Amino acid sequence: MPIVLQNIIRFILLVLLQVLVLNNIQFLGYINPYLYILIILAFPVQMPRWLTLILAFGLGLIIDAFANTMGMHAFATVLVAFLRNGIIKLFTSIEEGNNPTPSFYSFGVSAYVKYVVLLVLIHHATLLMLEAFSFVNFGITLTKIILSTAVTVLMILGIQSLSKK
Image (cartoon, helix red, strand yellow):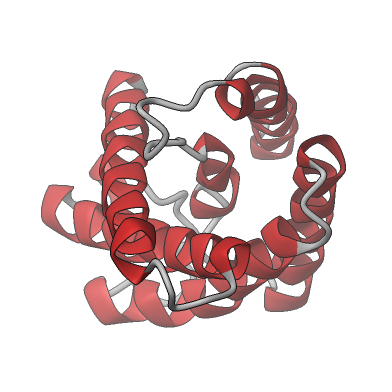
């Protein structure tokens, strides 16, 4: 299956899962997994930055429309898309002309886990700090960031471990 078709199917499935299931589940009031971020994490490495930013913005707006969050998801997804290439270069050494899709197999387990954890942490911290928009209950916000990041990372790693080379 062509990579473009795979990304379109992944986009539709993850957005539907996020807006129909995961946005309606709040575990203990602290954990809300944002699995849709996997769409941005799975873009090919050599994808042009401008296209990544536009797709991330569109993804964020779609999630914002269903979650009624007025641009918070759009901001967080664009930030992750902007930082993505630098973080890939930080943890991996991709050969020139090679355009892999980030995974355990293309990055290696250690580099891929670091890549996922850092980008998910940035996304969740940005999103939840914007949601709180205050340092009054910083402990509660920090707890939400840590727990939501942990659950989202575990879900992403679980999904990626089921995929083929």
